[in-house]
Image (spheres, rainbow over the protein chains, first blue to last red):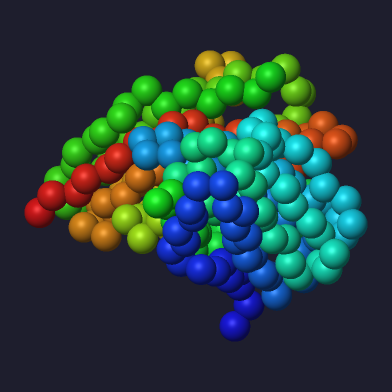
Length: 114
Length: 117
């Protein structure tokens, strides 16, 4: 089955610890995205990548880092510099069909700080 | 800058009735796309419907239709014949068509829809 997988479903972080969220897609999509969602809020863009080995900061990139070494994978690291990391993190990838770029999302990872 | 506004934090509708979820947007781009996503309590975002800024007709997808009024900068989602499974958070989003930000989405804060029997 084609789709986007995120792991783990729940992640706990201790103070001062870096953690990495996994995002994998087998849809052969070029572009991938990371969003953060806080309770009662919409999604805010952290980072995005339109092609392998290239990525751009979104609106709230501080305290996060990414890599895009393979087309299928776009891991997000939440560093200790991110002071309020508790949130729901969603990964997406997109395809362009008939001039329309549509994003499809993974199931998300809930990050909690201990 | 792109901005999406959803003014209804919550909406209630009886099963089998139709409901309209409001969305207004602001952009200076001549070309853009408008999307609606559904987020059930599980958290996953599900793509529902798309409308291009140059499309002459309103988009439809099964029980979902998008009431696009370009002059008013509104893109309301209409759900016909509501079902209990439609209870979820609904997000309106707009895509950028500018070079370096091509494809990125800007989201509203969402509307929580509750369908009652």
